[in-house]
Amino acid sequence: MNVSPQVAFQQADLSTIAQHMVSLLLRNVSSDGFRITDPANSNSFSLPGCVVAAPSFPANTPGVDQDYVFNWTRDAAITAMEIAAANLPVRPGGAVQPLIDYVLFAQTCQNNATPTLGHACFTIGGQPRPWTEQSDGPALQTLAILNAYGQLDAPTQAVAKTVIANNLNYLLNVYQNPTTNLWEEHSGLSFFARSVQLRCFRAIQSNTYGIAVPQATAAAISWLTAALPSHWNGNIYVSLLPAPGGYDPNIDIVSASVYGAIPFTDTKLLATAAMLRDQWANNNSPSQYPINAADQALGVGPLLGRYPGDTYDGDMADNVLGRHPWALCTCNLAELYYSLANTIAQGQAVPLDNLSQTFFSQVGVAGNTPPAAVVSALQDAGDAMLRAVIYHSDNLELSEQFDGVSGFEKSVRNLTWSYAAFLSAVRAKTGQSVKG
Image (cartoon, rainbow, N blue to C red):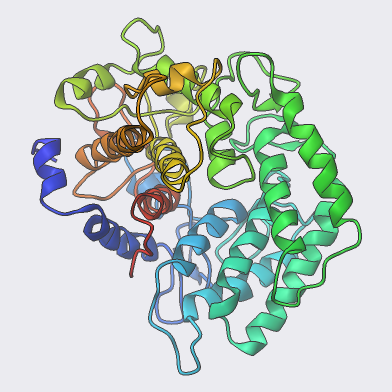
């Protein structure tokens, strides 16, 4: 966008921008009246409730060799969470059709899943695509269905209970095991997967919908609660055990607080977040994105990526180390700032200790800063990051990544998770649903 970030942000407030983002997100969700064509087969169409990761494939995206016209369980669940929060128009009887479609399509995928219920990626017709097994997906799907449950009609609620029961049966048998990690590059003991599984089990244990709580749930909660601290290496939470080289600090630790059970006040989380920000924003860091230095002069940013050794930029034939921050990663850290501000505003003490000191100093907070000023500083930090996302967007359309030098969008276009992450951050900022 060829305007200053200050002007871009003043032209519409966060809620108005987010309302537009709901419409952009819904373009990637199939319905009876809106079908998506399989780019590999013009006679094959999506089923209602299918959420494509992005409508991007090599033939229509120059410079990108990746096909994202598939339904990832994780991405679809995160999208459904935002649909459930969007107060969409209801059918007679109070149900929301896109959420009904989501649950029915989830059941189709679940029925077809092979080799395990943790299969991560499906065609737009609900058939398993050759891919990896990821045990965070069923946990996120369960959380999404719980969020949507009150907006489903009675027949779909019955289906929802079946899908959840199958997910729980699967999760209770695998939660102690290694899995393919969030970024689908390594297998191990995943901090993100463990965090979302813990949140899922806690939500089931406390549900008020009459969903059966398996007997083994309490033991799983205790085990995961004890297992997560094992990822602390004395400086940061490590994203995967055993730890691959060049993989940390990894943004999936922040994502584990947004979508999982890690408290925003956990000072080990804040220490990790500080190192994440520093590696991409500090002028003395070899991993700094040059665009962050330019944006700093404009009062916006920084933009964040996934991890320091990242080479994926949407073009597997031309991988380049670094230089590609992600919209969703930036939005997730913004949400951490907002959510921590909310917690402090509600009366909880500022979690400032030796571990979190750098995190707070990055936003101008010291030990003697009054709580109200801490809240304001955290909110301003989140705003600056969302301003950068808006400023570098293509008229508010969000790709997967930005070029770390020029700031222009790159990789696959119109990534559904980018919109969902922006919407989630805005809800944390405003405390309001984003109306579709």
